[in-house]
Amino acid sequence: MQSSPTRFSDKVAVVLGVSNENSIGGAVARRLIGEGASVIVASRTAEKVEAVATRIGAVGEVCEIVDERQVSELADRAIERYGRLDVAVNCAGLALMGYIESTSEEVLRQAVDVHLIGPFFFIKHMARVMENGGAIATMSSVTATLTFENHAAYMAAKAGTDHLVRTAAVEYGRKNIRVNSVSPGFTDTPMTNAMLAIPGFRDAFEREIPLGRLSTIEDLAGATAWVCSDEAFVTGQNLQINGGLSLRRLPTMKELGLT
Image 1 (cartoon, one colour):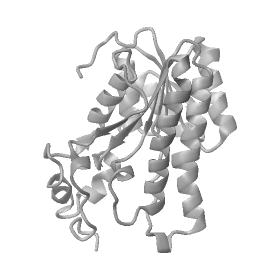
Image 2 (cartoon, helix red, strand yellow):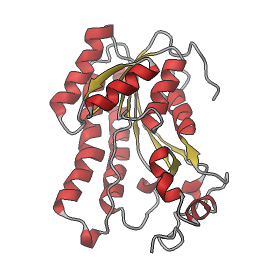
Image 3 (tube, helix red, strand yellow):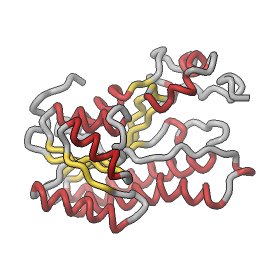
Image 4 (cartoon, one colour):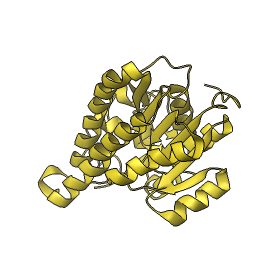
């Protein structure tokens, strides 16, 4: 979907999980701003989000997704500042790894807090202040559909959020609020440079992708902008933005050069 400088010209958006302008959240925020939206970006780290907000022309706010009070206040601040909220995108997440047998209770609870309970708070409170309809999107993962070694808690929580999205779509449809999730595959970002430097790592993933390359932050931003736009008569869906990786399988740890 081509960028339109006016598609969101009368819209206000919140993007949570923006501590780096070159992250998925940063790319989503930049795309929405480029298409005319007034954007509030949020992260749990004040210094990082304020720096990003200054560079991309957004308003920065601090918000920890696992704290319901902070998520509620983030939604309220959008109303206080702009008088409305039309689009809300959650990109907050943590890379939590571990097999079931080696996953501690602490890591399990952290995975569920960040990737299921947090999105629950996000959908609940962003929808609460959307008086004229709107669109909510949350980042999921191809691993919510395909199993991957060493990510048990993460995958389970992401799969739960995909079903939460379907439930929310039904509940909030009466308010003309659309709720969807977006599933990247392994994405080429500055944070993944170290893994992509492992010999054979990129090739192992790209062999499983019908379109032949890793997804980029721009791929994710474009799809998210579309599904949050008035063009998308879509709700309760999980968009697989990973070049068809979900049609095949994820590479093994051995194939990735990790064992």
